Image (cartoon, rainbow over all chains, first blue to last red):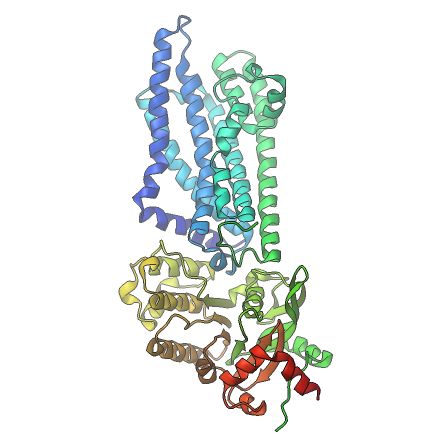
Length: 270
Length: 274
């Protein structure tokens, strides 16, 4: 693996961001709006709830983590779509760049863009709405790590789908986080779900993060259980990442065999 | 003079070419290349080589298999059979190493329009492992009269300017093998003449580079190429010097020969059989 070639993919994204405010603003604008919206909702709920239950870490913390996951996934797919939109596949894939180097470049681009969003959310949530991440302790690191790896995996898998089905298939990719969210239990415990949805949820790494987050807030023995669940969630996320890389590699190999890479510009290529 | 049409490569000739794949003089060696899409055969048993300091024209009518052949050499299309060696490296076994010695420009592969000329060249310089990209980019900007456009996004350049940017990108890594698919198709005659001179100068100066050039401009082919290969229906029908080949086949110009190959390849084969 040649780090310079990987860095070239990152540099391409830096150039694009530098020359285009329309690409920069969405990195933090939508997540900031989400935090503000949910921040005021939690404030309102705190004021009307009889129990004295603090909704801020449960709801606002969940929104922050979920938006981070969404930004990570979109960070990968957006970097990939830049090559789709500029019809750059022939130039990119006829160069010495390997698939692992290309995917690593997409991940580096995604780290850069998702960190911008995360920073904006952390600043807003802690300064305006008093969300303290010290409450989560060190668990905040595995929370973010699992969501990051799972987001990368879904981003790479989504890119493979667009590579296989053509540019129009990008509309299948945007709603993926919305499809996953009911099973991730972002805002409610998994016990709320019917049995069949709970079975699906056990295969979603993000569900372990949100269950773990609620267990830490609740305190007691739930914290111990959440540690084991977190390890399982991390293993699942890594398995998805390996599967996604395999899927992209296999899709690329097929595209090279069928000639799809060389003529990838039409509306649909199925 | 009786026409002589090279029949599909003789096994002994192919064996010799495979031996030459590792030789110092050969920069590209293609042997028994075949590509089919289901029952449709795009390229059938194509074998040829390009030597250093040699410009080889790959000619043929639309759909003859030229771009398919180039795509296979670029590693973006997998052959159904056959081998490709670039600078002695087997493309199928060491793709990145083989492509480090290659570069290309094609009318259908413009550089991303949302990046400036300099940004595009910097990115591709890094992808192709150029050791000192800055000075090399400056040199090429100057060589292709692109200095004034260094900060201009490629998407707003004229087609001629975009072609020059693509050619600058194609020369970034001092390629041993340069693939040019109709490189002057969108240029006016004066600019095309200038570009041809620059490419010839590059090949002559480096003395290590071989070029595979496709074009439908027979005047250009005659002016530039040391040797031409005529492809028809995925097979190489003719291989020879563009200046003498028409006479060998009873035609007065290369264009006449091209038209004959495009319209009646079977007649040429029949003449050969006779």
